[in-house]
Image 1 (cartoon, one colour):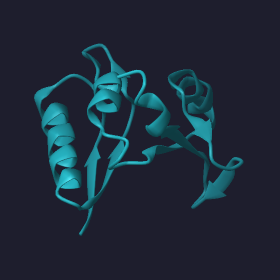
Image 2: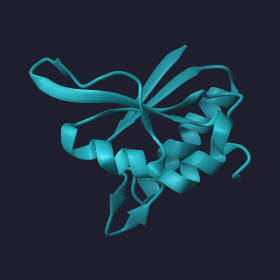
Image 3: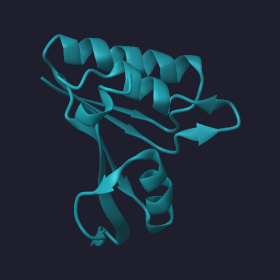
Image 4: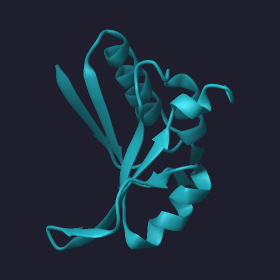
Length: 108
């Protein structure tokens, strides 16, 4: 089954941690799971590093985002790479980017 979870921010908090656990368990059961999130860092802290460590590369190829022009340099610092050039979709400028979880396995 294809499942999409949407959460406004991937920061420290109960709802966000519950969403990560849910996505992980559903993927382990063979579902095709996508997590869509807004900013990953806030005054509460961030969960991106935890998400990288807890997401097995065998299950997921990577974490994909559609970055606004202002977020590209931020995502590059986190290790994301552009999948294609900036484009306009429904009046919004985006750059599809991906973090390769396979290369992260040596770090965890």
